[in-house]
Amino acid sequence: MIELNKENFEEEVLKAEGPVLVDYWGPTCEPCKALMPHIHELAEKYGDKVKFASLDITKARRLAIKQKVLGLPAIIMYKDGEEVERLAESEATAEAVEEMVKKYI
Amino acid sequence: MSDIYDVIIIGGGPAGLAAGLYASRSRLKTLILEKEKMGGQIVTTDEVANYPGSIENASGPSLIKRMVEQAEEFGAEIKLDEIKEVDFEGKIKVLKGSKGEYKAKSVIIATGAQPRKIGCPGEAEFTGRGVSYCATCDAAFFEDMEVFVVGGGDTAVEEGMYLTKFARKVTIIHRRDELRAAKSIQEKAFANEKMHFMWDSVVKEIKGDGIVESMVVENVKTGELTEIVADEEDGTFGIFVFIGFLPNTQLFEGIIDMENGYIVTDQDMKTNIPGVFAAGDVRAKSLRQVVTATGDGAIAAIQAEKYIEENFEE
Image 1 (spheres, each protein chain N blue to C red):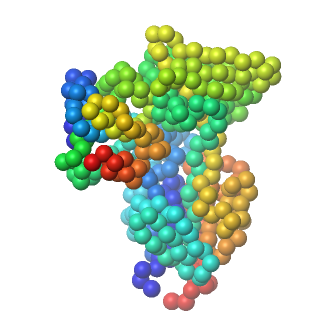
Image 2: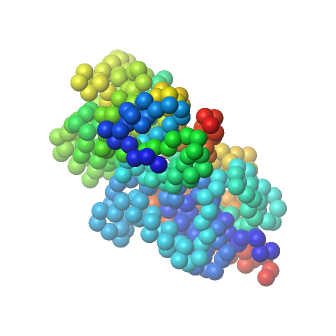
């Protein structure tokens, strides 16, 4: 999984071709930390078809807000740099994320 | 009969973990099933100050971590699976999950509750986009911004106080003209200069373009509507909702006796079905706290043991 930050977000997500999944999380967000291992598993399973990345919002708050993320966890699928689908807060379960990933492979 | 558990506990929050600890310590073959993440609602709490013996600065996650370790140490098995269907008709109870089927001589329901929603237009659309039900998850977004907290109970005021560490201003929107929170919490809140209060008010609508930009608040006494618009520089504000809970009992509708959606038990945590118990926030009771949840869990486990002794011969 790619660790995103203010410097590489544009290059890795907004200018990327094909599907990119971004896991927005924060160190005090327990639901995020519970979900994280599942995202890593999915990255192992589908990483050759979808780019998996994560962004710690405490290090790039303005960037997250610009992406209209104001709540965690938020799992967003981008395609060719555009947001195509998002799972927010309680919707973001391991099962739902896998279903979403399958749609874009 | 080796694949049949003595006790299956549905839910991995404080009630379920306490039940798991007591049941496994009584040498019952015990399984705790949790659908998503261990701990339940308490993991979103930054400070657990009212659980007897909890150490200074104990957080929800740290307390749960110790509870999980303790239950496992006594031999309780923990699996992550969401139960979709239950069959409580036979002597052996059957639970169907998304990953498998489980059988047990007795079942303890500790599925807890989840935050209640405002139910106004825009709330669902802006969840994760300014509307939040978890202060520890989302407080960091609102550093030096404005946030509103909806509710007037212990949780609303305590989470509001937590948010003052990030936001420059926290306004509590409460439908009544006084708080329901404990007096000691109120005193701290009134003494905090970042805390503000909008009395007799309810949120009617939340609006914005992708993120929260404004909301309409109604004064319930005068009927007057006020639109609160985000500071131009901030572009947004937070709305944190803490207006009580809804029990997670949909699975048991028409199967177990309930009252306003909560499972009815006697003082031994017995439901109307022999061998099926309920513990914690899911149960109809007067105080929903970690301390009462763990108490319920312990009683349910001991009663399950008694039930098995009386109804199953080894």
